[in-house]
Image (cartoon, rainbow, N blue to C red; front, side, top):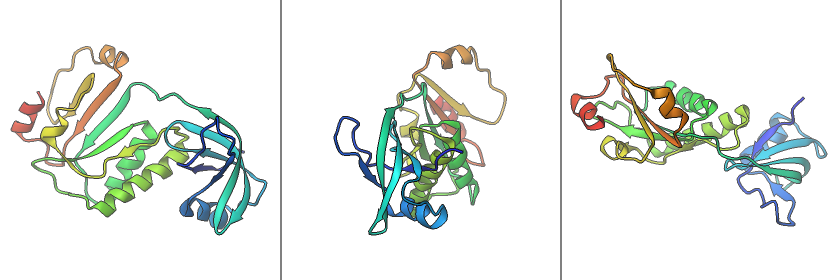
Length: 208
């Protein structure tokens, strides 16, 4: 049975002598109240930036779970990196989108403001997206967390982002030539996803 996995952004550098890592309040509460882990039990930790550790729950100190690190490893970031810039859908579909993008290996989510956008998420909702990315990363075994931008970005700025391959999901029939070869050699891919009402002609022209 796999050890329970926890997000620990303050993992010490593997070359340092410090081998203790406390979990934050949310992760500690999950360990103690939900999983009912006891000192001495094994846990896996990750910092969301490529560093992973096998550890043992040492103790609960002032409500925080303190873990003793046994070994550490650093994972290389998968290529290509994938940025999805998307208009935010209504209701629970937004949370589902964050969860699925994280599990599929997306690296960055940019909430996109378009001419026909319906939802403009508040800061609290974007914070919830970031927390959902942490939970999805724990479940899917990712070493690198999905990064959720903290503010909506205008379409005109996003289409100018640097990427080897840029794709836009649009209603209609469009010819895409040699996409497999282009993706195979790419280092960074940008995917644009529009709102329920699709893009305007002006947005499609600008993207082209």
